[in-house]
Structures are given as structure tokens and as C-alpha cells.
Length: 272
Ligand code: PMM
Image 1 (tube, rainbow, N blue to C red):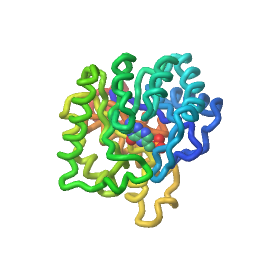
Image 2 (image 1 turned 135 degrees about the vertical axis):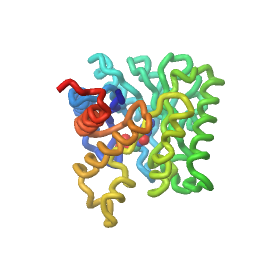
Image 3 (image 1 turned 120 degrees about the vertical axis):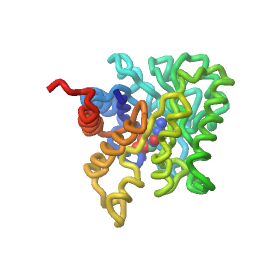
Image 4 (image 1 turned 90 degrees about the horizontal axis):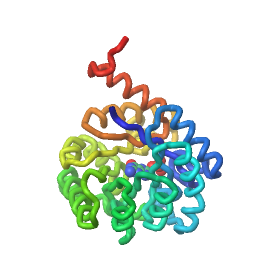
């Protein structure tokens, strides 16, 4: 069964739900709602990675996320911390987070892999070529899929050198990170080759601009959240079909239902 990671952004400027869940109480309520809607993992983040976004100081990031992590972990939820900062990862794990989701794959903070190794948490290593402020400057590939695979293998090797065994690693092709429109579709078409690297694979397409672009040639701002969520439910099923272990989404219910239909199509869920 494909796991659903529900997104709990505690930021004023995330690209798709920015500002909606900034207060800790609202974010905790959102996490509980996502869990009730079928999310198996709650991914709590306090720094937007929206293209062009400014960095957030770790102290500010921690003030945003730690109360939310403490409350959701106390509920018994599997919580992941979406951070590029080792200090934030460390504090989050102390409060009960079981997964560190580092969109930079351990490249942003030289202490990150060591902190993860010592913590016993699992780690998401995402494909990343630079910070959001200038991420499109790095969106240059001769042959995207082999380069994506090689760069993920390099992060997996770095994790192993730091003492993190591959069974604790989750790889992520980094949809929308250092990739423009069509490059995201190339990465998704190559997902089976990312899966073939070995570790579990997480895919995050939820509400992203390349999806909106696929829905209309017009401005992506005009594509409603509901339409982006329907598109995300489909990409989540396609990711599952390509062997993804988990999908990262805003609308857990839509993805849960789409995955349930896919499971029945495969003959694995037939009990009616
Ligand atoms: N995307 C965003 C943030 N964190 N983490 C992982 N592992 N994979 C992703 O694709 C990913 C991520 C950006 O989306 P958001 O601002 O809507 O959370």
C-alpha cells in the first residue's frame, strides 16, 4: 500500500496554502484533519521552498514548527520534519518526529547527515541543486534522468558514509526543485529508474505549477485548488504505479480515494 504524507505548512508564504495554517493551533488542527482523511505521515514545515522564497532563521523556523510537532507526535501520529537545518531536525526528533525530510538532501547544512545518523530517524533525501532564490539557474541538464539518478546515488552514498543505512533512507526526485515545466514530466517518466536505486521513494507533485500548466495553457494562477488536487490524485496514483513508497499531498482524502480505486483495479482490494 502506498503511504500518504499529508502537508502541514506553518509558513506565511508557501506557494499553495501559504498563510492558511500559520498559527500553531490551526496547524495542529490541520494535521489532525489530514490524519482523519487518511494521511499516514504528517510533514510539518516552517520554511517555504517556493521558487524565489527568502530563507528563514532556524530560531524562527523552530518557533513555528516545534509546538505543532510536539502536539501531533503526542497524538501518536508519524511526524516528519521538513527542514534543511540540522538544529531544527535535532529538536524535532527530540519531540517525537520520526522522519527528517530534507529537501536539500543533506547539502544545505553540513551537520545534517550526522544529526540524522545519531538520531535514529529515517531521512528523506530529495534531489536538489540550490536554494529557492535561484533554483531555476540550476535547471540545466544534458540528460535529466541519468543525472537525477546519479545525484541521488551520491546523496545515498554520503548518507552511508555518515552512518545512515539505506533502509533508513527515502529518496525523492524533487519535483519542482531545479526543474522547469517539462523537466518535471521527464523526472516522473523516469521514476522507475529512481525506484530501481533501491531505497523507498517519495514523490511530491501536490498543487505544483507544472500540474497547473498541464491543465491549461493560460496563467497557472487561474487553476483552482480543487482542479490541482484532482490532478494531484492522478499523479499520486501514477507514482504509486511506478513503485513510489509514498506521495506527499495537501488533500489526503482525494489521494486516499484515488489510491483505493487503483488498488481495486489491481485486484488487491476486492472485498465487495
Ligand atoms: N515539496 C515542497 C516542500 N517539501 N519535500 C519533499 N520531500 N518533496 C517535495 O516534493 C516537497 C517537499 C514544496 O511544496 P509545498 O510548499 O506545497 O509544501
